[in-house]
Image (cartoon, rainbow, N blue to C red; front, top):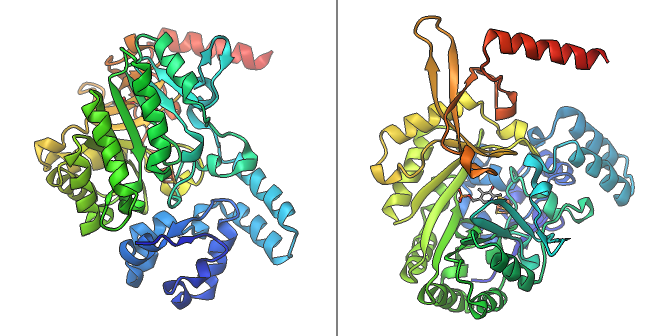
Length: 438
Ligand SMILES: *Cc1c(COP(=O)(O)O)cnc(C)c1O
Ligand code: SF4
């Protein structure tokens, strides 16, 4: 199987595109100035149901549409394009819009660790046991998801890339930090790298013989966007990739593939099933994760079907994320209360083997916060969210449930008001007044 990549320059050559109204194609061109578009022949030919493209989850996942931008932003870019402004002028306008879309949420920049006093720009270290590594060659993807919070990385001029070539420093960092047990290769998509490139990293890790390192993870959407990475019958490099996985497992490390699936439509065909079987045969495990996305997967039925199918295929459902406040989040975001309801309705009737997803989670500045429940005071009728951190910069702060005032519109933890005693509250109000009056 040969890959054909589509981007904004050649997307009109897609056979199905030729049948769509000109208006739709122009919208794609306009929105893609801000949200980078990329797809390939597998996505176009096998994943999208073109008869219902307007509501098709895989279409919406890859093809930008005008509702993903705020009206005023859309008009600005549209006018620039219609006036025929030079490309660098349009890029300047697009970058301004991008910067207004909160391109570095959850203070990601503050997770960059230091090695011997020098920052390690291709690494993030937030939770004590796990280090994230962004190899330079893994910072793109086979296709771009319209919702993606990593989108600034695909736009070079925004200069927010986390990535580096040198694994040596990462190894030295892990060696110096005894409590680090896991290394997560992420991106972009590290599975876009050739097996030979990844093998260079892995060989070095084994040569270093790090006693504290127990687990390697790869975060990837390749099972959706290009499952041929794992299919030797269709791709000559695939066997090398599978051999590499086996080398990691046989070398005594646990290997976990963190697979992104947003909809069960992405895993129904034989290519994906075979890819999953091949990966599992190496001794690696596959865990799955996805954000909850309005317009793509915001119903309990979609999630329970997805989990059932994942369990059936031998994968472990892992995280349901609440959509971050970045990029086109207004198009995809779901209020916390709705996320919680979708989760409970989906999990209630799912196999217990899917109950490894414990609640919808937010990757917030302090850590991963779960919405565990909505509780009502039976005396006053007041409602509260029950929240807990399952991951926190400070591990001692995890698994301590706390209440926040219920708010049916809230979509993120920082919009919730803490529950305080009347005297505390009064004191805080006074302080706020004092500060604002200065
Ligand atoms: C989610 C995340 C991890 C991994 O967390 P797990 O709960 O172990 O899957 C690690 N680092 C950062 C910065 C994260 O956001
Ligand atoms: S595959 Fe992952 S990193 Fe790549 S665009 Fe999609 S969500 Fe973003």
